[in-house]
Amino acid sequence: MRLPGNMRAISGAGARVAAPGLGRGEDAMQRDRKLTLLAAGLLLAAAVWAQAPDRARALQEKLIAPCCWSESVAAHGSEVAAEMRAEIARMVQEGRSDREILDFYKAKYGTRILMEPEGQLRVWAYTIPAAAAVLGLGLVVWLIRRMARPQPEDSESSAGAAS
Image (cartoon, rainbow, N blue to C red; front, side, top):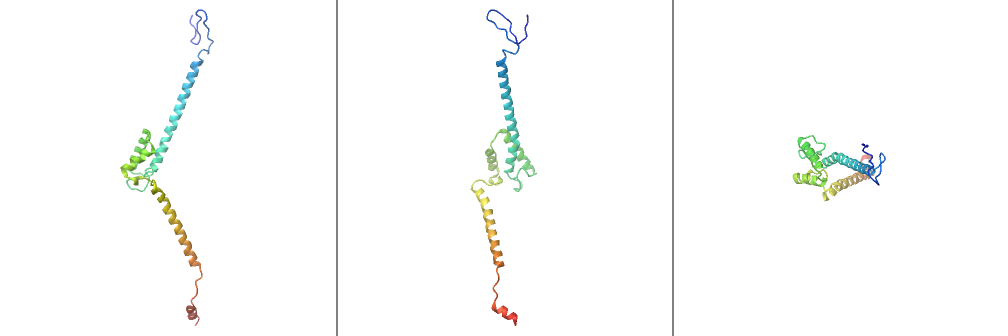
């Protein structure tokens, strides 16, 4: 007599008959673990995949288009900028770090390719305009105060005008 797959036949002393649904508990738990790991892996891959365009866009914003040196690679419409965008996306997909990608372009075009200077130059790039603005504001305040002061009248010019 043939029994369903989830039941065992009685054969000999000490054999057990499995009730339907029992005896596969370990298999079911192992299958659930595998499905959970698969789902977690897919979610992780989706998260990494979704980050790639954002990361590529951020890198494009950090580089200047070398054809005119006026706009970022992300905003510029030239053929060179389009090639750089594709190259950056490819490098991100290959798994290169941001530092590796930026270093690649610095080696190819020099530090001028960076939208913001690095290191000590970055400090000066923010300090000099701020200092110039403070000095300019001080100069304007000094000039306004000087012009608003009443001018001392000369005794000669006022005596000559009265006669």
